[in-house]
Image (cartoon, rainbow, N blue to C red; front, side):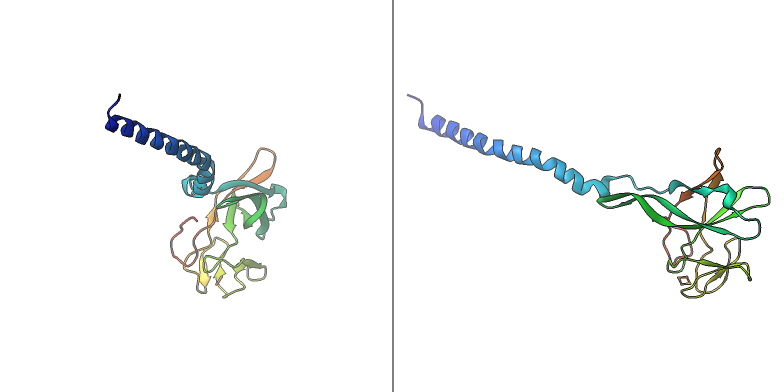
Length: 176
Ligand code: FES
């Protein structure tokens, strides 16, 4: 006959084993959901913009900037939209043939900056910030120039832009 304490110890151990099984199964079953929930936090943040082909280089004009819509994948926390409008850019051909690109998002509060052909200036409809063709602030509340974005002509005659958004209201560029 076994001592009472040894029997009690075995029972306790079996009880613990009976509870541990379902707990481990529950934890394993929850792992995929936890991974999805943490994805936006763990996903490496894109800090160098997204390369997007915006249109044909033949659309550029010599005398005035041309607006083009940036369409690409938008990733917001848990959602991915493969073909979304990310923004608008203003494109100009420099005398050396390279491309100057500015985001149309006003650095003040993000309104879409338009273009005044007569004055040859970019102008924001919200609080009247005005910008020179090179993006400099001429007047208004914007704390920094228009945000310049890298752009290049592709081998097949298109324009590719590295599109990014920047925090408004501040004097320095901080990608968001
Ligand atoms: S949002 Fe452009 S000037 Fe205010």
